[in-house]
Length: 413
Image (cartoon, rainbow, N blue to C red):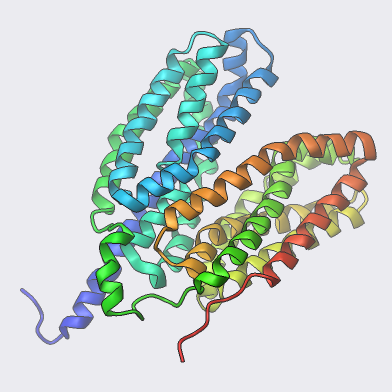
């Protein structure tokens, strides 16, 4: 029975909020499962994989780097697919494709088939991970509500490594890596597929809402004028490339870079543990207090954290306190970066072409990030850790400057 004492618009709004909450939680779960099985598990399984095939670890990670690059280059195609057909269909197909790719990976017999299977895994992952989920939330919630929803979802997604590193380690003690990947394939079919079908039931491609936008042009927040769009896109890509280069350099070389700077391995590993909780904490704070901040302001805060983190590392010598401050601030910065990756393009350009736009940004930034670990290693080897850290601090400062040149949409008079 419907309570007539509650106004119909309020009941509808309340129902929409609950529906959106279900979507956020459901997609948050699929991001934990997706990142856990398609990305984080590899680091745990790699030693057994390399031993099984009889090749050095560098070959396995080389295959992963190639696969990640190919996955990033597939981003624009995946984004256009989502824009045209809707996130529900694409993410459901992505769950099936990811399951099939993990089965192929478990069946690989040599370097060629292993590399090809890993490439397929990372290409299919762009159909189910953050960029696809961001587009799905925008199709369910619209531009206005999507920012908070993206923050909430990334808060949940931040637990992927927390759950899947120990889970993968446990499974790998009970069975071989091939069986682990088969179990992960079943997770995509048994959990991710039905969740995508259920929680994205209200997702509509932007093209389906064109008539509604013409009838109510104020339905979404204002976006940039077309004349400003190209300039904004160039500076935005520059921002994500600069910050991504720094994150990628340290994420790959965290322990070795700190050791070469004079820290012990125990200190490097110990402070590295602080990054995960820092990412989750800042996403929670952004969810509670950041609703009134423009996403470009959030991006600026992220860059400031990164600059200060590197300054603390340079100033600390080999002091443990400096390393702790660096790890916490680095985690805070990286935690916000996942949010602004989805919210800045949405608030600048709107929902039309959102998926394809995220894909183009991802393709370029992934190409840059794939070079980062190699360049960073060269800098440390030839110029020393202090110079390498200073160069990263300069890139972080440049990222802050690029945000200044991005125009903001005009508010309606």
